[in-house]
Image (cartoon, rainbow, N blue to C red; front, top):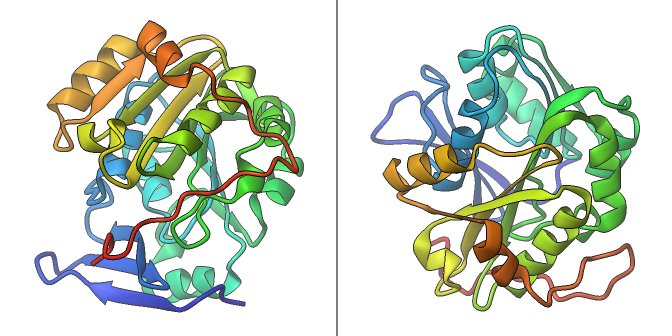
Length: 267
């Protein structure tokens, strides 16, 4: 089953590059010859966090798969890593298997499951990294943004494990603040990375939440974010506390307006 219309488009500037779009929204960019090439800025920000984790292979869980860009990156930069991807769209997974060499990624298991079902099946303290990058169109599924689900993620992560969440939001960033409040209730150490314009709520875009129970490499994150291709901001500590102030955590059944991109954002 495929949820929506999926397009696979070649990159005219990189013969080995491919973009996957669903219902007109770009979801993944994959370079088949160079898995360390990351085209989307928000994926670059996630990679900055991953690169600063302790050296060696990772046990990683990816909620939301699409082209499996980050699993390919982790497999290339941290050989020996064991990875699980949960992606509910079986038709999309089959397309990626057939056209984008998914079987060539070592030690990668793909489960055709939604995020909550897949997470519930994972063992306690079994992951070093959980990447939450699941979208329905251009919006994050609400059931993956609640306190109940974050409790499940905390159960699966090892004590020193790291959570990465991709959040899309626009003017005012009300939804991002609530997601941060929710994540922060389960993980006391937080950082937020985003393009400066997105961080100020001036335009719709992606923000990356990094979270841990034991600590984050904050100085390294700030330095690499500012100096990378994306030239992003990294907010943490008292600045982030002020940013989140007054936002209430999300719970299962909480009524909330999920932000949607304005017309023309994706060309």
